Length: 198
Ligand code: ATP
Ligand code: MG
Image (cartoon, rainbow, N blue to C red; front, side, top):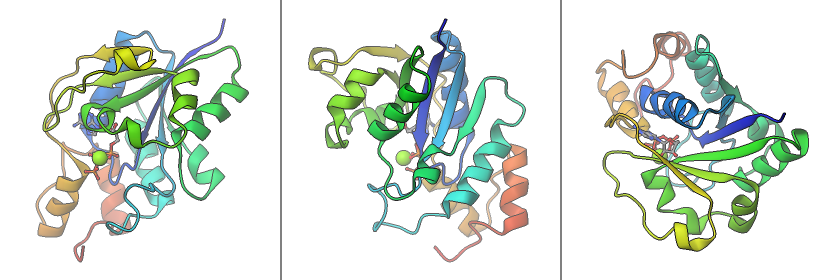
């Protein structure tokens, strides 16, 4: 029988426990076999607005963070494809590679409210069930049910953590510990990432 696979796309600049708590709870609630945290190569909605950490460093952080968690993996499909990253392409690639699997695309409330701006959204609708998780600071999006989506909502602990806040903390010299998994914090220190200047 095919697997139930969750695709959780993000910039992960850096990954934090908000991402991981959402991923493991969605995995549990929907009995997914695995959740792939797919690291955006060029997040087209962020490029040009701010400097984004190199994709390989962001990928290494995700790998370090999911290391000990069964069923969570770091995905490098978008990095390997190169160029701008579109979820529609990632889902098509996953569907081609695992034709008998069932795909689920995970998004927080903030991103769920922006789906209309996604590239080839009809392909995303066709290829996957949308999984929406609550996130502080954003409202629950409405109207998706009537819009042709297959939707699941999963309630996760509200964690008011964002990569934006973590980057600001790093610049100020405030601690990232316990907001970012320890192995990822080590990598950040070893590589000197987020060390001021932006
Ligand atoms: P940034 O502040 O740079 O945008 P971020 O914290 O929003 O970073 P992203 O990589 O943009 O992280 O988000 C990837 C996905 O994770 C999105 O679907 C987003 O809604 C979800 N997400 C991020 N943080 C949380 C959180 N604390 N709780 C639930 N979902 C989250
Ligand atoms: Mg974000």
